Amino acid sequence: MIIYGIRTGFLESLLAIFTIFVIWSVLTAVRLTLWNPLKVLRFMRKRGYSGPPLSIFKLDNSHELDLCRQRAKQAWNDRTAKSGIATLSHDLAPLLYPEFKEYQKQYGERFVYAPERGSIKIWAGNKPDVIREVWGCKTGAFGKPSSTFADELLGRNSLGLVVNLDEWARQRRVVRPHFYEGQLKDTVRRTKESALLWIRNLEEKVTQSGDSLPLDLSGDIASLVKEFSVRTIFGNDFESAQKGLEHEQKLKILVIQSGGVIHPLLRYILPTRLNREILKARKLYSVCIKQIMEGRKESVRKGNMVSYGDDMLGIILTAAETGEGQKTGSLPKWTEQDIVDQIRALFFASHDTVSSAFSWLLILLGHHTEWQERIRKELTETLGEDQISELEQLRHLNSLNMFVLETLRLYPPFPQVNREVHEDGVTLLGDPVPKGLGINFDMIHLHRLPELWGDDALEFKPERWAKGMKGACVDTAAYNPFGYGPRVCAGQTQAQAQLKVLVSLFIQHFRFQLSPSYIHLPTMSFSMVPGHGVPLVIEAITKV
Image (cartoon, rainbow, N blue to C red; front, top):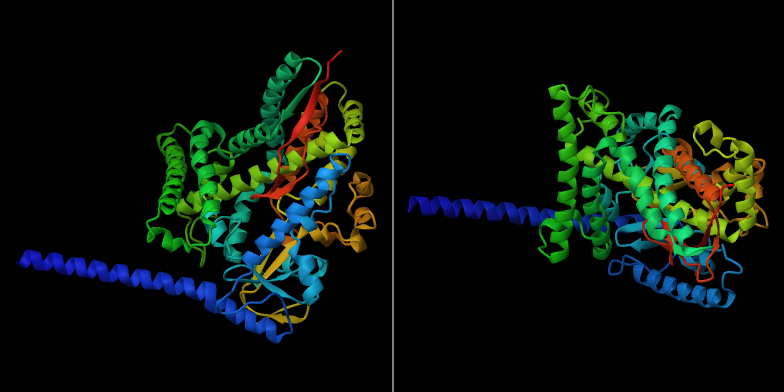
């Protein structure tokens, strides 16, 4: 009887704890998705901001946005079917973000909208001054927004998502030396090694086929970029990391299927098949990375390694054990999960940025074959019959540099960037804004404004960069493929170096043109990608 009473009391206590946990989770979700957004909405309405209908019963515009984008996609497909590939339209705003033009017509420049539940935003697609003030802010007034979708993919404490300004600065100090010139030389070498293996296999296929070969390179590009991204981050632990990243790729797909809108705590409460699979994929990935970390620690303890390595994982581990990652002032010591989150974010940023940009570079080079020949000639004049081997050589490839800059202007990998007001009493261009307000920076519009880029803003013209940024655009804050100001992407120089190496090697080995079957449909996945792959007709260049 006593034992029965103890068991009953224990079960009752466990049930009470679980009930409290559930109630707390639900109240937290209500606060984040209902109460806080309503406060922001009321504040902005009082400041004279209009916008699409929003109320306590309907606090998001996602359904209308989906319908608007579906209509825009159908209209785009109809136009593309008529024009074919003779001309590629670079006016992507009506396809990707048609809602902003409609909102401007209906509500003027001052409007708020809710692209997802719990997020009230203003649009800054035509305001470089807002970019300068928000991204140039050196306090914690503006920062990265909390996002359930991004948190589930990358982890809340990664460099890409961390909200605390001091923690962000600490993480950036750790990873930034990896992108200095000495490390970039290794990046050039690793990228070249991986690319040459791929190119030799491709050359063999093309040569066996005869004169030319039609191929969709989208799968090849994803695999290639994944390989050298993993080698850059994990070094000699490449094989083990590959297995872990398979779970990460699966996690991406599952989170997209879920919509990413469920509060993370509810993943553990709602026992659906999708929730179980998300938790399993996340756990398997974390376990794999933690095993690699523990293996390095053990090797150092046994004297088999003198350090944790000079790759990205080694740099972060060293900081966690002996440097910046230790408890500093109000900042806590990094946990294993913090390191896993950082690695996840770094891989995601590296892979998706380069994969997207390289895809668009090949498509545009296949369409503008005159620039392909111009860059090939420049490579011959600069390198002779040699290949890129030094970082310094990239600086002399002016035509290639102009082509890359123009491609990133019209096809930035991440064309929308969001920030959030993190403090009370903040003003934006002299106008009070409430804590929790989101700010949408839309590069698709900003990179095409005629008043900033000229009347030819919708045209693909690499020569606009002949005199640098000041010759291309009247406002330097209007070009942001990698961000702007103090929080500009730490890896932008590495990404551009990798892109130039890949393009130069490909052009030296192949002549190619865009396949007649190509359908121009830029599509938002995690980054902006070609919706119908990268179909090219490739011809190997015979060395005499």
